[in-house]
Length: 264
Image (cartoon, rainbow, N blue to C red; front, side, top):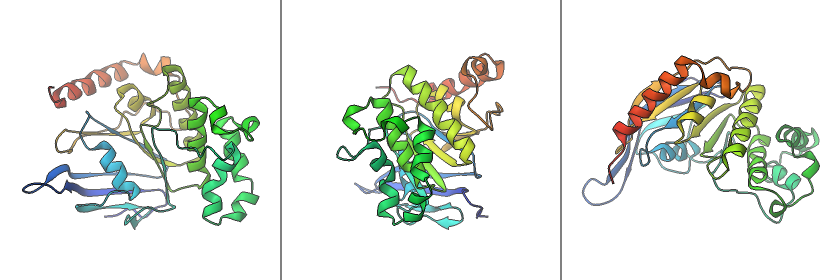
């Protein structure tokens, strides 16, 4: 049964096979899970397990070989305004100011009323870049440029925010700051998130649910709901990591990572 509530995500028996010799290469095999509005789901697993493939199929950037994906009850058949996507690489337009970058999606989609309602200013405030609104991307640090990309996706107010290792290129301190920033924003906005990461600590810090995928092809090995109780705001990282349940779950996931890793 498909959940048609606003912001819901339903992934049902999704498969992806790339053409090639014989029957081709199967990257994803019958993956199924779902998210309710406001939940943060994490795609986790070893390299080559199909995490980014599942995310790109959800974004409508990859075709689906089998199964179906629905966002807010509507089947995904290609890219759409109901989904916002942020990649690991910085994707700001260098010829536009910070403010113009954040407003870009609204302008090309003809959402002039939302521009007038101050949506851009709202998200500039949320990411802490109001005083840099007239700066250009090459005048900003890497972390600030990634904030711009996230704000641009948020300004369209998508039903589902898709994050493909968005903090992977950042230094550890900036990465932790960005994790807390994004988690606080999506909690406040009650936004549904599906995020790819290979970092176990990041998955446990941010995720309400973790879809751990096995390797070659990617199958849902385990659906994990950590239950650390941070529904309203980003948790204190130090306190969270001291919990026995956190340490035990971290060790168990690392064990699965070792099980699924393919020797070089």
